Length: 195
Image (cartoon, rainbow, N blue to C red):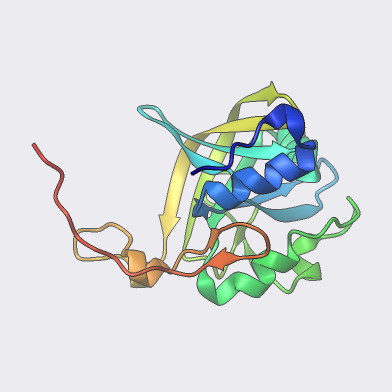
């Protein structure tokens, strides 16, 4: 027996909560941007993934037109910082709706540091960041899919494994689940793909 949910029968808010409780876990793009006036912004987005590998493109979705989206459209640049378990309180705090003129790094107690190739700063305590230039924004219903060309990935040496890639446990990524639930770094099982 299954319960059937028809989008036509539920409010958009209720259907949003159904989707976000069903599509789990979702990695978090902790997006840092800078406004045309030079004000730093950082906010988490849990609709986030890789869009292309050649060329490397990442994407996240802004539900509604928020400061991050406006800043990206103005500057053409953004950074995806990896949201981690030790930073959960700051990640959550940065999801608040702050006035546009507030430096959100300072407001939530985050250290910023210069990025390598783009103007927006990265989160200094995030172990990895993906620096992007805007490829395109696609409006979909009440949301905006933001695609960015990856121009640099920076990873702290202490989270790199012997093969030169980030170690999942050392990275300690957060994820979003449904309601007010957050996913902590889960156990890992190794399993080769069939050839």
